Image 1: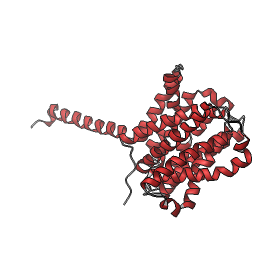
Image 2: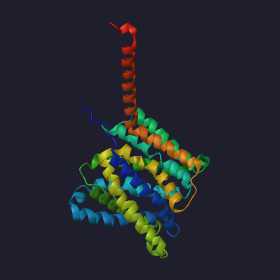
Image 3: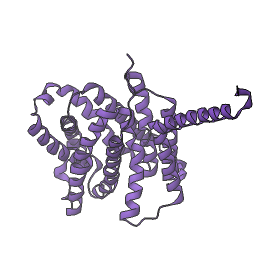
Image 4: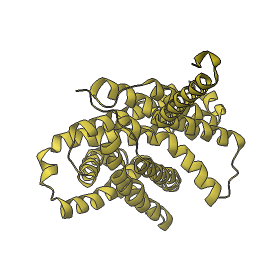
Length: 324
């Protein structure tokens, strides 16, 4: 029996939109934090704070025994879905502009659909998905500005690092859905962030020992707490819930929406000007999401069939050749 293809419900789209806003806001808090702290310390603080919150929630709801029973698998998930991509993106952004990094990061759904198509039965590539993914990536490029691509190839190692992070996110998303079926979002988030914290501790101790850093300001501490509590702990509760319901490819679409939310937040909260090319990019992304969802196309096709049948019926009634 062929598994039914995964379809996003209105609730799934709402959760994905909220997740995009939460992760879009993380760019601002990251920018505040890295002004005073090395990126790898920011990454460690982010997953460490989230781990404390999520482990507490998981312990109260389920106990921690389910995590300990499969801890090697959580080490893999923590590595490929948090520790490795967080570090690669942080390092890559020291070599390339944030606009180019956003475009390269938006390739995550492309990697996800390839991996999911090869390893799952209900998350396959379709023509609608292929069209939608192309439109979505095109929309991100237009929205950020094609000028961001002018530096493409200038810092190949940094670009490869961000692309590798996108591929790692995609692999982690598919791995989480395949390996941890039946686990609650709280357990998944706790296991992933806890493992990522353990994995990041040794390199942080070697590269940027926290005890040698200056005490950060109150603003940076507040940014780190918000990053950990909201943009990581709360975000992963949403992320793993959508993943269980809608699959890896659909969940990875959040990388198309994150730049949209970041720009809109800047427009409404910082009074930044919304440029025409940004609006055009958002329209292209919206069209891509509609194509991936597929239901609008099916309804349009059904309407076209019914309309054609209605015209044929009316023509038969008025055609004298059909009179008795």
